[in-house]
Structure formats: C-alpha cells, structure tokens
Picture (tube, rainbow, N blue to C red):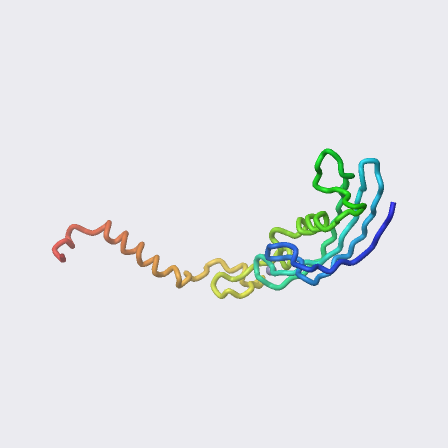
Length: 165
Ligand SMILES: [Zn+2]
C-alpha cells in the first residue's frame, strides 16, 4: 500500500456548466494505492475550487469542493473493464475528473437564499425589493395587452355600433 499527495494543474477546463474548474486551477490530491488480488484499488480525495456565476443573480462565485473517490483498476484479463492497470500504471485522470465534475452543483448560488435579479431593473434584488408585491407591468408586454384589449372589444361589439361602418 502506498500513499501519495500531489497537486495537479489543469491543462484544460473541467466542467461545462455555469460553474467549472478553469484551466490552470489546482487540484490537491490525496491518493491511496493498494494492491489487491484482482488489481489495484485506488481511493482518495481531491480538493479543488470551482468558479463561475450564481445561477440566480449572476454574481461571480467561487467555492471549495472536496470529493472522495474509489475505484478498482483491474489487471488486464479476458473481461474488459473501464479501469485497467496498464504497463504497471493506473491513470487517475478519468476517475478524478468524473468525481470532481459530478461534485459541481447543478444550480450554484452565491448564498442559499439568494433573492435573484429584479425582473424590472435587472439589478440584484435586496431583501427590501423582494417583499414588493405589486410590480408595474413590464413595458415589453404592453403591446400584447393592447392586442388582447382589441380582441375582446371586437367580440363584444354592440349591434348599435354597426352603422359606424
Ligand atoms: Zn446570487
């Protein structure tokens, strides 16, 4: 059994979402490698930090991530497996990458109760504006409102008004 601690600098970005691990960021790995009957059992933990934006208010965020992983790298045999010992080496990249990317939040937020953006001003809301209930109608919708007003007027046209046409 051997233990290794090392730091890896990412040569490319990991993760595709609004938060990811950028190129050049560092992963601190703590890995334990054990020889077992079927192959080599690798377990360990990785500490990294993702960056990106809050999914609600688009503020820049960065958060530390700690994730554990474990996988058996089998000796090459008749059965093909996802992880194999090759030339007396185990390649941890796929394993660590999957574990680290899966640890990224689907809906990252700057704080658990982030109030998001104000739909009128586009500014980040504060607690005060959040309680506001009667928001004025968005001017972008006013054209639609005219259309619906005309529609209902045409349907309810009074027979007395027909002489106008
Ligand atoms: Zn936010």
